[in-house]
Image 1 (cartoon, rainbow, N blue to C red):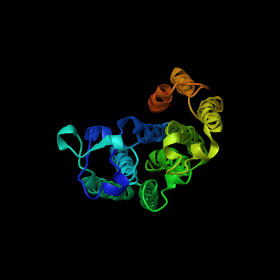
Image 2 (image 1 turned 135 degrees about the vertical axis):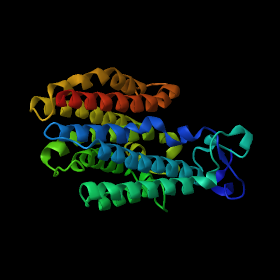
Image 3 (image 1 turned 180 degrees about the vertical axis):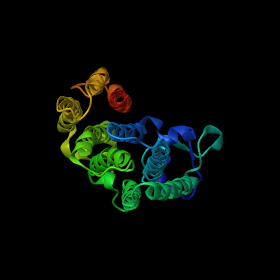
Length: 304
């Protein structure tokens, strides 16, 4: 054990895995899919600017990657995930621990610069929204009481990686916020909250002495019930959106993601092995990717 909570200042530690793994690519669908769907909803009724779409994708990806980096940085400072780090640079593929905040801040600065350009092209209200997103992304892991340590991780993800991100994809194309886009954003809010909850259920034993996540507060059994409810409601919401003609019938293609949802739920069945629960996070990420991209495909099929 590195005992990083005490000694990380005295030694120089390095991330064992690559820069790419530090970015957590499997989680990035939390940004990509909602923006594609929000833009697709805009395209159902009017033309869209793809330069604005690409700029928004880049800016929000920078924010999410920076948030992921801060999460690993502060987890190690607090004595968590020590196996990800080594004091032997020959055994590492990634950066030193000390450089991570600088790289993350550079990404946030780049995101803010792109956001200002997008605001000039669309609506200036996205500037304060972006600032709040950056602040909450930082506070998710940082500070004396990180939001993820007081049971608010799922809530932050629900709002900023679910509702706000989807709505941004719609609004920057020149549309006002309405019931339609809020309803379309709701499944993504549920899905990203389920992904955070999956991670916290997996880490209940590890987190118990360090932080109070929603999973540790609820306990394993009730947390799994909530997890099942979240992604079940996401499917029911898309079906309802389709039946009420808010989204095209092609949106029902999301039902093809059900096998991944079933694998996720099976990973947390009663008496599941620890290795299966650990793999549950992989299924949660893959489920978000498949569901999100299928939903986006279903919307854009309706456009064309």
